Amino acid sequence: MPVLLALYASVALGFGDFFAGVGGRKNPHPGAVMSMAFVASIVGSVIAGVYVLIFPPAAFGSDDLFWCLVATCFAAFARPLLYLGMERGPIVIFAPVMGVITLIVPTIAAPLIGQSLGALEWLSLGLSLPAVVLIVSEGGGPSFSAIRANAILPLAITVGVLIGGVSISLGQVDAEVGALPALITQFGSMLLIPVVTRPIRPMAPLSSGVVRFGVLVGVVDIGAVIASTIAFQRGNVAVVAAVLGFAPAVTIALASRVFGEHVRGWQWAGVGLAGFCVVLFALA
Image 1 (cartoon, rainbow, N blue to C red):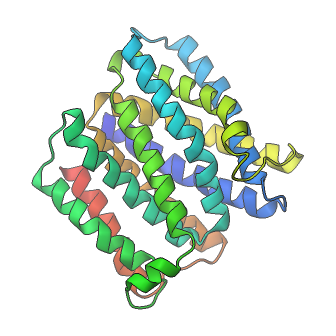
Image 2: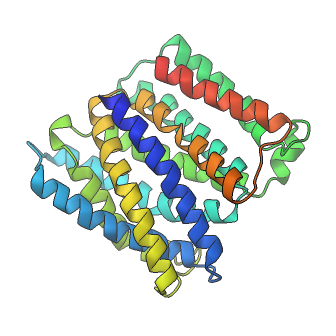
């Protein structure tokens, strides 16, 4: 069940992230994606609230509240920066690098939270770095100069670390809590996003275009958030994070189809290696 929930969440997240990029590129205001993240969090809070009323948690302790608040802090930064990365692109670089980093963080943290790693997980961790190098090569030969010259790489790494932090935090919440962490993280993000985005990019006015895409992304994402929240509670954090790592594949396919962004040359090897890492984690 946790793997199936994570698989659904990965597909939904792939679509949601892409829609966020589309909305940002269609709106000329530089803070449009920040406002979309705010609107999406409002929508997510409402839907998650209704879900929790229908399926209330069986238990909720102080430790659960603590980890939910930690996850909220990570999520409040991750969502607007994720949408910013999708807007800037290239998505075919940003999405897979972010996905690989999202896998690495829970894997490194696994021993610290009492979860052991097997041989396949260590192998996947070792292959992740060359995967990133190949992806950012943009079709040329892999080199560290290409890494330094790639403007989107730091943002992709930052978002990957933040999402990894969300994964670790939600994995510490008891399974009896249900979808309540999804409500807390969405509501908390709604409160924090206007504050944390101000030094990065001030939010755009809530125009009809911003609201429309924000609602669309919020509806698509919240199903994924609820599903992944429950999956993290009931399954191995590293394995669930690995299945969620398929989300960039959906985003890349959409970017290729709609924006004409294509994986070229050595990038194919990097994307393939990143996909292989995800498979290794899922099989672990």
